Image (cartoon, rainbow, N blue to C red; front, side, top):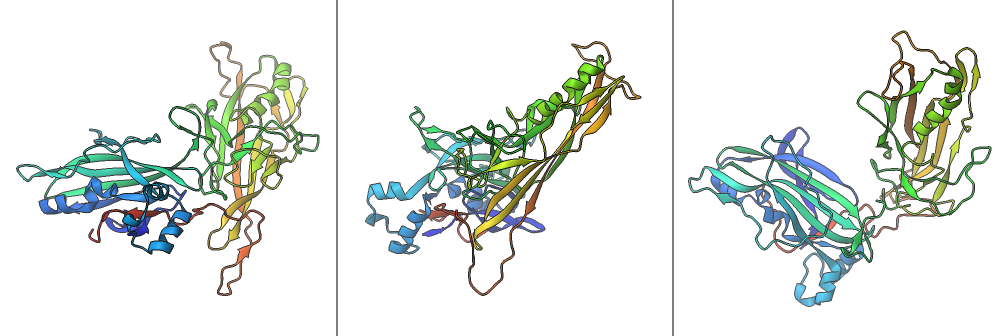
Length: 449
């Protein structure tokens, strides 16, 4: 039987596993719910507690494969009519990758794996103890790791955590996780190589990184020049160290649709005020660039732009209100024209079919804060020292950063039919954002909860 994939979930204010939620392609999810166990027979018979119930299916590899099955078989597939090579092309088996037990302190651990795995010879089943007091091998956590090449699913593995519970009185807190990992075939011995992950296909998905490129250089009016092949990376801001300083080792990724407002401290040696002023702006710009080699010059309009091209419709220039210049110094200790704030403004709109809209970035603007004057003198609470500068002459300079997203999607009128928003690049994923379908070889969970 072909049916949408689904996992148990709670309902609104009810934590119990009372319903099911469908898994959607390229949409990671994490949910938890509670299973009440009141009798030993329920403990051993509930399909939601059995690991086998999460492995008794195979995945339909792509939307064309699903269309072929529905056209030729409807919802019930006769495997005897399929050649072995057809079965291999149409379906992807679910394989068990890791098994573990909950930590003694009750915390959770990340047991994810993205490597292909083989099916163990014996899959544990729920076992009732001899005295009937406990049940072992009960599913506590299930994580599906789905590898894909943007349009076709190439592998599905399961990481599971099993526990032992009271057979007659237990509330089993189950966690269900779904992750999508992109892979590309290579000549490596393991057969796979992980590229820069997509942030959608084609449109950006909420919570995924913004894809940018750098190294193009800017002309005098802030526009990029010298278009060429350049590396692609995720847009990021400098992170924070434990004392609130700007970290160059940790970064904060900018994720689509999530506004950010932060500040951090850089320390400037003001023992020589004139030299400090001449180096201050470079220190701040280096902080802006600490999450990458240079400030990015282009942004991918779509979430699947993992390779930079000179196509202006796919890669947009990042505009700036001006380019920071060196400040000027006035004795005895005043530094003029310092820019110490950056606001990244991202505009986007939904394009494509109304039933399956795709988020397309239409512009990114780097708005530097107005120039300020900064007195190069220790505040009333004093300056600080460092290992390399024992004299207390390090002035803390606050650097401010912000990211904001604006949705400029035009409203559509309802006329009882599906409208199409004009776009030169409509959704072309073989799955799009539709539901991921599974072929059930055996009954997965049944109808009982």
